[in-house]
Length: 292
Ligand SMILES: Nc1nc(=O)c2c([nH]1)NC[C@@H]1CN(c3ccc(C(=O)N[C@@H](CCC(=O)O)C(=O)O)cc3)CN21
Ligand SMILES: CC(C)C(=O)C(=O)O
Ligand SMILES: [Mg+2]
Image (tube, rainbow, N blue to C red; front, side):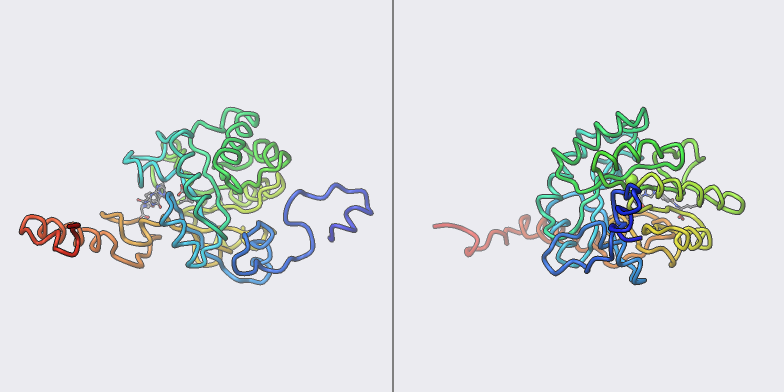
């Protein structure tokens, strides 16, 4: 339905992504949520990465990543916690500010951390407003399905674009029994019902984490808004990874859904080792590094 016919029939148009298909963003122009809807309609998959600081935001933006997520996964990839649960709004806000200052084109999504939105739609809006006003984020993300439809609606009607997150939701790891695949078998119907409820509440996209590829494919076909997979198979509209997994900075056994595109841990370890040896041998600084 076009925006015009919605007006003539007296219906209230949904806040986002329901207008006529818009052109994809021109190079150098800011990515908007309707561009992502347009990519879905054209069947063009798009990439999303986490970013938590200036250099990664600049590099990923220039590499053509249209959406950057300042994930609550900063908990275990920046701050050194063992899970996502301890990280706070006050810890994440400076990271969101760094990323939004640095990304010229990418749309920046701020992940709402555990405890900062679950209490009520009012709490969710108060937290989202901080990420938008102080962090300059263009959207926020929160975890949960039907039970959070009212929260999503409060945000979207206040002008805050919301990305949902279903399947394995790390903030509920204690309830879900650890890092496990979700929505197997019968539970695939509940996944679809949750996704439809988020779309109905005004979400502009939905992340699906660690769900069977078949379930993710079905949700992707049933939704008008884009799905973003992480361990959800090849049929999602978009794919997201934590950047330290993607670039091989994080060591140890990676989850099955990770593909490593570089060995940053090896590169950095090698650079630091070479620097240390140079200093110990008296070879750094050389004359050209000193002032006379
Ligand atoms: N670096 C990093 N990457 C992530 O993908 C990530 C984070 N951190 N922090 C927040 C959450 C936690 N996530 C995780 C963490 C571990 C597994 C994991 O160990 N998966 C195993 C077991 C799966 C199973 O037993 O079913 C795997 O092999 O995929 C999965 C997702 C995803 N998110
Ligand atoms: C893995 C993505 C989707 C996330 O929520 C995060 O990085 O916090
Ligand atoms: Mg997260």
